[in-house]
Image (tube, rainbow over all chains, first blue to last red; front, side):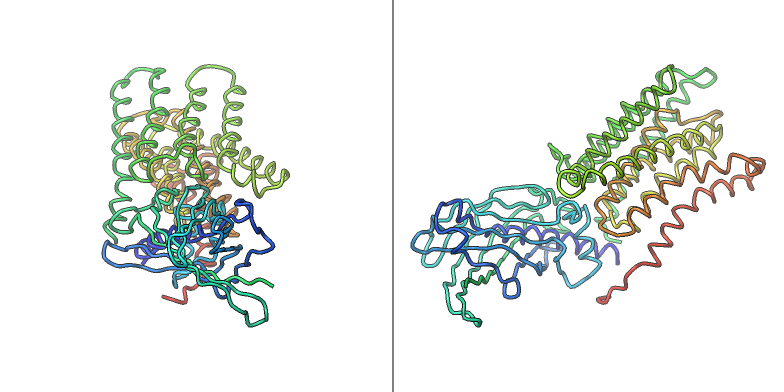
Length: 206
Length: 292
């Protein structure tokens, strides 16, 4: 059982890496010098998701998630350079529907949650790549290691929120190698190095 | 058991065990019938550090430079501990040797806890953590030296149980396979010394070799405490660190008068007590998994 848990943990770790990559969606609006914090949407963790996918035993895609996402984002279709994403994901919120595996993922062999409690993504530049599609380049930090990644984002636009404010949504995907971030335990057939991260953010603005 | 896990565990235990057997066997063969040589004291800690670093690369991955997490520091800190242990290879005032151990202990603990010291520990907690580690290091090394000074296999065996059972505590109490494997490397090397001690007279593990194994094992336990996140982690580590001291009790007072198999059972039993308590506490506090 322990072994399978570990394998799952590895998969989760890989997934976690992907999630982190997803976290990388956080923009850096203020850095771009535009609208900045006042115009940014605050991430609503209840309606946002961060999923990761890693291949287990070389054959099975395994999905996990992080249940807590914090931060803010702003996508300006007219002025992509004014857009930004800034996300923080508490590692302790990892959820792979197995408590033992979740605990294993928090250990030093994977995310070392006590030492590195958060994963972050801070955008550095945003460029338009199509209709409502953007490339968000930024720094993804996992387990204390920061690497540049580019997240492909589909912007969902804005709308009226249930509480009267304004809401905005986006979905981003990115693929990373978990070993690049020091999460290299059991990289191989048992648990792939490649982790795909999907992040879906809903933000609120009053 | 998963084949990948078996492979990982084997790589972390078999080559270091063979290396330990060759190391201590060769040193014994070369010096049989002669007095201790400087090489016999200088070579083991250096070889042990080299074996650890090689095993770390093959089992735990290439060391990151610069190190990021606590365990990333191990391939850098174990050679540092080995260098400090060399003070015991030469004649000199005892206070200088222990000063070297103390300074080394503070340095390796501070580097291991670098992220915590920089981000989350207030100065008072940093002082307490490093101070406790320093005292524990001095006590563990002192008791370990007492154990390995004994001729015959019993001293080496009871000392070997410290890294071996610390690895079990790291895996089962602190849930760190990574650090458990690191501790397992030292246990495997120590196992080689135990085997050689079964066939030769006099102590097998020299003082420097004892220092590098004892202090490195304690450092790994400390890192396990740092990265565990379990509220009972300090308790587990404290209990595990008592291993050499409790084992040494078998060599003093009335217990020392027990000889033969009775003495052996007592000594080994004492060495098993601290980790058994730690494992028992962990078992009693385990949380049921609703998914299994």
